[in-house]
Length: 154
Image (spheres, rainbow, N blue to C red):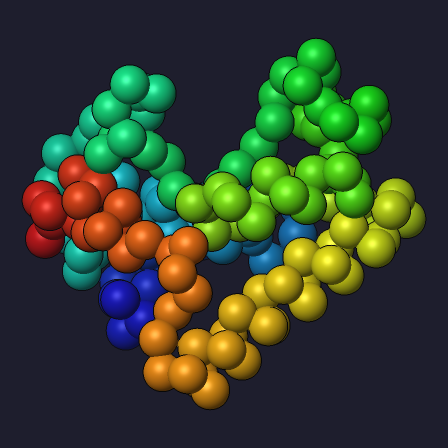
């Protein structure tokens, strides 16, 4: 996948478009790789052959790239930016149980301890995995291996 993203003309064009859209020299990883993976005509290694819209009653269709809370009613911090809940300390118990790879949104000057706690939790998990030779008991690799994109891909 790394070689593909660095050399494929379509991949490079998508990267340039995402950078232009956000007026930045970089773009969000979860947007870039999801775009490549969810467009089978690009033929990216590991790309999904069929697209299944996320459906809460079918966990195999879950979108695992990014967790976002779009609902002000469920936003524990009671703060939002562009209609996205800003994560805070009260969100940590939920976030440590989520299956997504990224979280949107943390803001550096709002409860920075929340980000620090999540980072500590992740580093501790990596340390324990290295020390004991296996993932934490609460991690279920079967969830990821059963996703539609995991079972039906290029």
